[in-house]
Length: 293
Ligand SMILES: C[S@@+](CC[C@H](N)C(=O)[O-])C[C@H]1O[C@@H](n2cnc3c(N)ncnc32)[C@H](O)[C@@H]1O
Figure 1 (cartoon, helix red, strand yellow):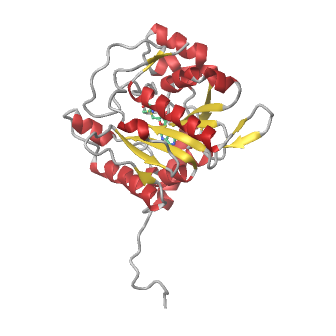
Figure 2 (tube, rainbow, N blue to C red):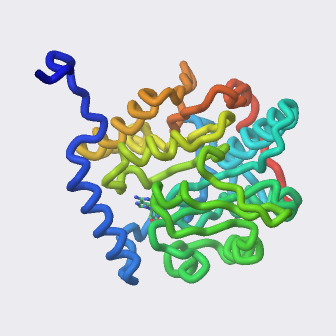
Figure 3 (cartoon, helix red, strand yellow):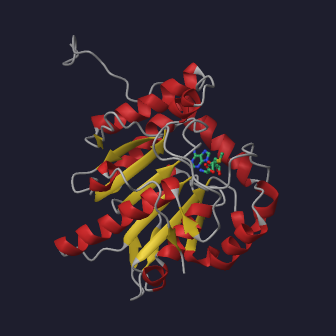
């Protein structure tokens, strides 16, 4: 007799076999040089609102951090501070999963320029096949000043052709020449307009969640909520289900979901135990900006 007879069975990743094959075929197809079907929203520029109905921003130059990217900056500063207090010398590891051209990551890396040069901070932008250095002007329409800023500072960012499983096998090189694995060491992971396209969203969220550091923060853009807050219809039902399953899977593996209370955000935020989250309660951050030198 089945020892689990009568115990409800919960399928954490329904019909995963076929989907694994499907996503491998898709990856192989893209990597054989075929164009990515995501021809819009590839800028990786996150200067839009972090909170729903946040106040508007005036036009932004390429050397300023605003909106979500400014929130990321503040979270990173707090992670760094907390690590220092704890005597944790590990480098700061930031990932933009499916980050397209990586505009915001280039800006953030520039804001942490000294740390990046000393190999104490790493900014990683992953894409399935797309390599922004070759395709930047084809994929996104940046203003000339933004494009110049990206090309001048792109070397501060590590671009990789990886899905979630491949990403966590990567490592970065420290100043003493040793390799530092990403596995279990990601301090902040950002995602926007990726999980909705990812056939394995429910599984990939687990892979990524498991590999966050103990200070780790995951910012996953809630596109359904965002579209609805703009008066549009949300994501198609099957897509929404897959993405939401990823969110609940994260909680099943012990990653905590942050409750935004009466100040809802365009993002879902998941975090590990030591994540510093005080800045999320700060009501005055929105109009602030920093200028990158
Ligand atoms: C629409 S772009 C989003 C770019 C950027 N995040 C933004 O919001 O501007 C989608 C990106 O997700 C990547 N992507 C799609 N499926 C993926 C997967 N399974 N794993 C990793 N990246 C994926 C694609 O390579 C593409 O670069």
